Length: 174
Image (cartoon, rainbow, N blue to C red; front, side):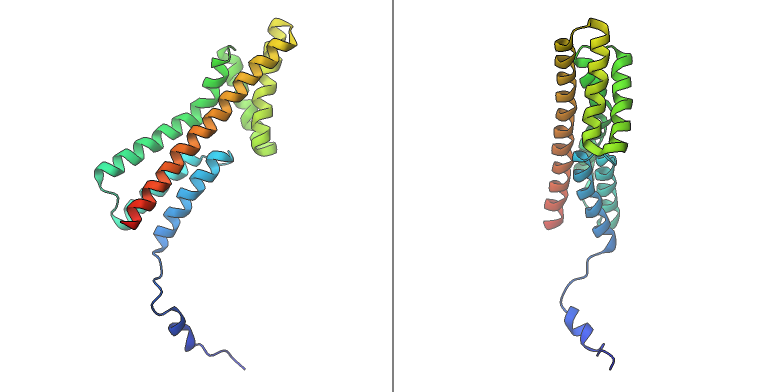
């Protein structure tokens, strides 16, 4: 016995079917927030993509709001790309060590996700500091500062991408 397919239109009658591009836009916006916390993909870039897809699909937001949202997105991208190295540099290590810490953090992320990021940065900064000063306490302190800075950049990225998502939700509801 085959199912009665004439019932299907009456089941969805009256239920609006969302524009697939709007669904993609919100998926990108949500992914932007998620990947700001879980650094496997560039979360802020996904958020900017979500804003652009939403604009393309709906014509909203207007030019001023679009400019502000894109500026917030660019700020989040800069925090994403430069924040970890700046945090390592701010902990007192050389530019070379902060770049090595960034590479080690990226490699750690690929291998072990967010924990790998933190271990890669902290381990690199600790080893470099210990090699320079031959004092474990100084190495631990420097690594802790660098790690706190990396965690701070994650918080800032999440707040920025979350604000972009919230703004587009409000725009969509208006």
